[in-house]
Length: 152
Image (cartoon, rainbow, N blue to C red):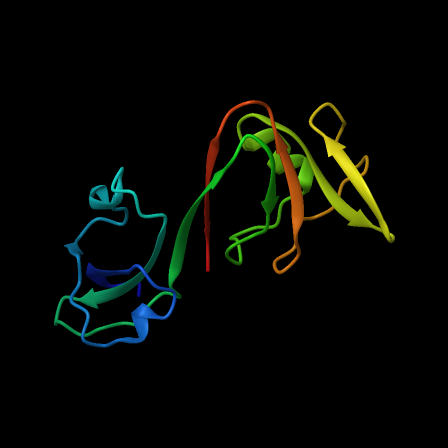
């Protein structure tokens, strides 16, 4: 809403939680950005947000789609890897190798064969776009790692 004077922000710990119209907003802000400091370091890993603009007369605009934040903890060695949300943009397995700390590589099914895209490989070599609802195997060096996904 171009004439928004403030924004109501709602949060839920469940994907379907924003459909409950009894929720109260957790923030009422005039800023176009906002940080939810209540969720930092509290041990939960899954949150969904909805933002509703409000004009100067108190009229509500259309809400955003719920935005989800999901933090996954991966164990050292080999672990399962799958996209928990529909992400804001698509990324290749190479991108995840470069952006998730301590990754050795990601194993995925390509033309009926399991292939490893190792961190040392250039983009495009045994590489693919990570797809929602597909499973991968991810390998780490000797440390537990967390990564946060943001999407819908």
